[in-house]
Structure formats: structure tokens, C-alpha cells
Amino acid sequence: MEKLRKRIQRLKEKRPGYGEILEFYLKVREEQEKIKVSSRIKPILLKKEWKDLLTKEGFPLLQREDFPLDIEASVILFQSLCQIGKEANPYMSEHVNKIEEIFDKKRINLKELLKEGLKEKRIGQIADELRLDKKVFLFLIQSSIRPSIEAGVEQLRSELDPETWLKGYCPICGSLPYLSLLKDEVGKRYLLCSFCGYQWRIERLICPFCNNKEQGALQYIYGEGEEAYRIDLCDKCHQYIKTIDLRKLEETDPSLEDLATLHLDILASQKGYKRPVPNPWIT
Ligand SMILES: [Zn+2]
Ligand SMILES: [Zn+2]
Image 1 (cartoon, rainbow, N blue to C red):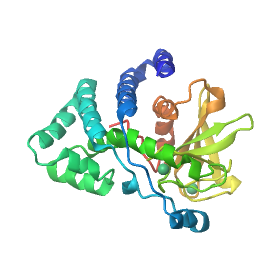
Image 2 (cartoon, rainbow, N blue to C red):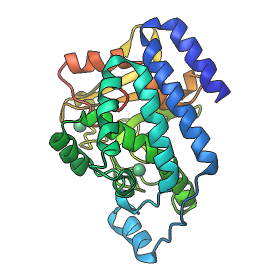
Image 3 (cartoon, helix red, strand yellow):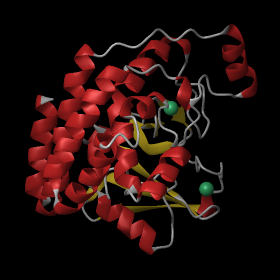
């Protein structure tokens, strides 16, 4: 955490415009870390058939709703994240207040809702029905269960080989990647799961969303003077993924680096490319 704080301080000095969002990020991460220490999840019992399906058919090990959650811890975290949200900015504050009201008036039971995990469709329906901001609502739920999800990934780590999967979706939960990372001296490329945070290897030159490998239909853009960050554009599916070169950075919190380079996302979207998994931190 100390490293993270220092990195945030440095980023804020370099890009003052990001101050508010980086401060918010730090507070959320601090709460998540605090909860992580005391949260407990049930062991995940993998069936042999599931592992066979993974190797033979490429089916992910779990569905998102199969992850065991520490509900008590998630409820506490949800409440502290609401508090942080209310202090973040007027927009967040307004929408978090509305969300809290729904639970205070017992129109929805928070515990029951968290038990369902992250069902985007269902959360979207509730948000529409009760006129809540869907992105803020999703963010609060996803961030509250995240420590449990990460604990689940730790349990499964020894069941998988991150070097041999090579697909465009997560071997653990089947979700799309959120970022791509370059590591080791040779610059091996990895994908980072948008839901569970697992990292697995992929080829250097491939679009993870449509498997396009044609050199002529893949291009990059860099920000000025920012060689650690790159946007990989695919001209087949017109989508992009941000690549962070961890060899060029001391701190290795990819989500933070992603958040501090939103200007590259704007650049890509101006060129007409879409990001399949939007950044959950911006509302
Ligand atoms: Zn995953
Ligand atoms: Zn593509």
C-alpha cells in the first residue's frame, strides 16, 4: 500500500487533472485491503469434469456466480465505499445517496443482492426500475465483492498454467480481458481479467477480442512521451485494448496505470474504436 500511495503521489504531480479520481482510487483500495485481512470464503471444490472441460473444450473453470463470497465482509465494504463515494464529488454523492435510500427503505435487501454476485443484467434492471445510476451501482457491488473474488482466484491458481492458455477470455471465469501487460525482459504479453483479476499469457500480435492476427489490421498508438502505455487497435473488430509495459514502470498496479491514462482512451474513441470492457472507475 505504501508503494501505491507513493505512485499516486507521483502521478498526481505529473498529471494534476487526475488528482480527484486518483484520490478516490486510493481510498477504495485502502478499504478493500482492510477488509481482505479479515474476510473468509468457503473452499472452492473443483470437480474433475470441470478441469477436463477446461483442457479439452476451453470452458472456463467457474461461472461468475460460482465464486464463494464473504457476504458479511462485502456488506461492510459496500457501506464504506458508499461513504467514500459521497465524499468524492457532487455527482457520485447524489447517486450514492439515492442508492443508500433504496436499502434504508428496505426496497431491496443488500445482503441478498450481494449474494447474487455480479449479475450485470439484473443490476441494470434494478437500476432502471429504481432510477439509479447503473454505473455507480455496478461499481459499488463489484468493488465490494472484489476481495472475495480475489481470494477465490488465489485458491485456484495452482490448478492452472497461465503460460499455456493463450485465449482471449479468462480460464477461471470466462470474462473478457481488461488490459494487456508486457512483462519480463523479453516482453511476454499477458491479459488481465476484468472480473477476477487473473493474468494469463497471450501471443504478442493478436487481437484478444476477435483473434485477428493480420499484421496489416493491427496497429498501436502511443501517448506523447509515454512509452509505457500503448493502445492496441484492431481494424477487424474496431475494438482496442490498452497495453501497459510493466518493464518500464516501478509500480505494478495495472488498474491504477489504466486510470491515469484515460487520455489514451479518449484518443482511441475519437478514432472510432471501442473498448469492450469500459473503465469501471469513471462515471
Ligand atoms: Zn477471470
Ligand atoms: Zn479484433
